Image 1 (tube, rainbow, N blue to C red):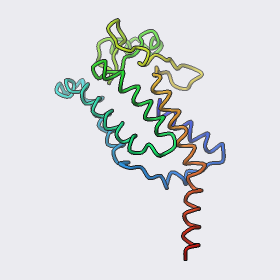
Image 2 (cartoon, rainbow, N blue to C red):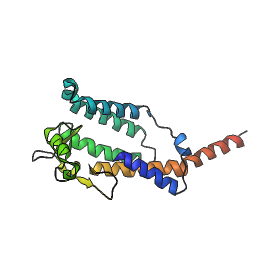
Image 3 (cartoon, helix red, strand yellow):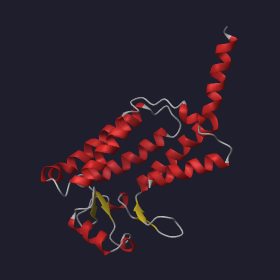
Length: 194
């Protein structure tokens, strides 16, 4: 869902007359962490059902990834939208943490995703997700919001995902519409100082 939000934000930024030049001047503290965390998460997802040790540690690994991600977001909280992204990730982290490291998913909301997905969900072998049951803590923070046509992709998202996307939208709009203004001001100040 976050990738959908980023793509939508870029399209709206272009529609509003923005530019990708602002992205070139983006300076994030610990920016190298994000692609590493994403790569590790993908590796866990692909290997947890093939390598027993990774499967056994996957819940704890997902929690560690979220904690590091939250630290990264907090370090960059001065950027527009990052506090909102932090809040969304924190909601997802919280519901996963109290449910043993897995994101609870509503079976009812996920019905349209197909029988194989539902069976994997119930068996607890689908990525970092598990089915919501009577023993699930804070199920309202889990993946309970179904997205289907006219939305281009079928998926189930959480309140935290929605909040994260709002934050990402704010940040990308700022970069595309105002990021180059800061650079222009910096260059002008440099020339005036000579």
